[in-house]
Image 1: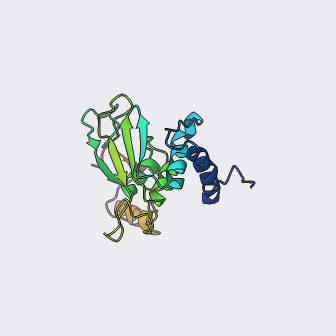
Image 2: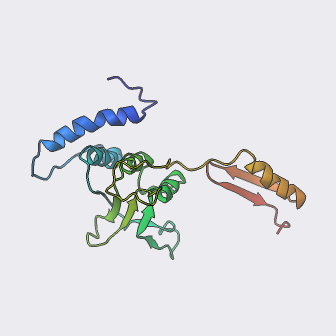
Image 3: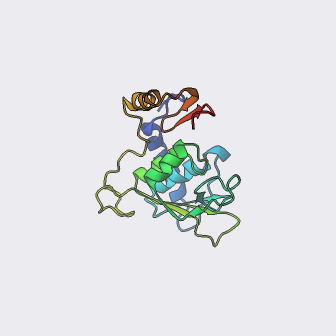
Length: 193
């Protein structure tokens, strides 16, 4: 198979499932050690877990899990014990660097929970990301139930018009505006508030 490196889609990841799983299956009852490029270790683990229908993917990091804010910047940040895949996806698409979106998409699509734990704190429970339960009946072990899209929702077509209409009605001028797929930030003049 030939894939365009600039456009790797789900077909590429599906293609990788088989060789990864075949290599790990050769280990039998021994514990396999998989060495991957540093930037792709989580993705390799996810692909293997999906192919082997694992009960859980455990990602070892140098942090205790996912926090309410960056604990290096916010001293009162709290560890989140449980997240849904939708919540975790929004965090990763908004800049959280704990787990890569591609990694999460692979295992969540297969309804496999992800546990993020600290390599230096092996007794910590970390954060577990459970697949969404859209119908209220899907459990983490129900691999066949459909999942809603984990990608963040885009702004509605008139979202910006509503914001700027409100600012106009209040006579407020915006000095600076920054938008992303899921956020809008504005700097208003000091005399506005």
